[in-house]
Length: 185
Ligand code: HEM
Ligand code: HEM
Image 1 (tube, rainbow, N blue to C red):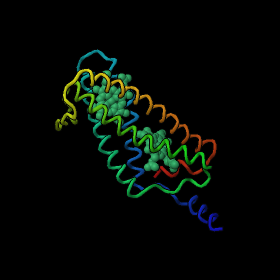
Image 2 (tube, rainbow, N blue to C red):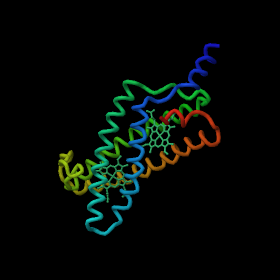
Image 3 (cartoon, rainbow, N blue to C red):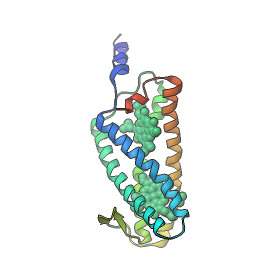
Image 4 (cartoon, rainbow, N blue to C red):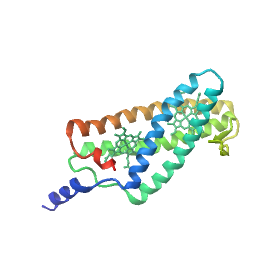
């Protein structure tokens, strides 16, 4: 009886907080833009367009890192609402693993981009406002292997996002449950 009541209450009201929802969508837009910009900028001819995209990618990457650290701190302190009550144990476990992997890999990806660019010897301008200090000494071999890791991790994150967004749409369109609503204001 208590369980049924709890589930009813959960179904009716458990959502992420306004701050968690705001951070989710802000970072989602930034990361969904960072991936194609990262892929396109590498294939362009050298010139002002390529330079501009590099500056945007690095600046937004550092911004994503700062936002993700704030979001992670908030998540560790405030937690998340209990799982949507209609999910079975396997769905709860898989979604939890994908969410935690997204937190970890996006933070790692930004740190690796920062480290790779430092080792390459390029300055990182934060939207032209200030220069972000290097975190590694110049070293071509280290830079090459870090950029390779950055590329692999970029595709891994993109794959996880296909799963994540596909699952959200599946819940909304096919199952018609309350999963998507939890992350909508
Ligand atoms: C159209 C795009 C997207 C949709 C529809 C969507 C939907 C959702 C929903 C419904 C949840 C809550 C799931 C639950 O209650 O168990 C969620 C959580 C989450 N999403 Fe997304 N998402 C999208 C894009 C993204 C992107 C691009 C990222 C990464 C940058 C992302 C990262 C996360 C993370 C890390 C969580 C877990 C939040 C937490 O528990 O603290 N999402 N998303
Ligand atoms: C969450 C944040 C980030 C994401 C999702 C991301 C994603 C990507 C992706 C998908 C690529 C294309 C890889 C390829 O096909 O070669 C790329 C390239 C690149 N990223 Fe990032 N990145 C992020 C943060 C950063 C940061 C913080 C920096 C530096 C401060 C950075 C610097 C670069 C550079 C310089 C390249 C070009 C590498 C090359 O041309 O070989 N990235 N990024």
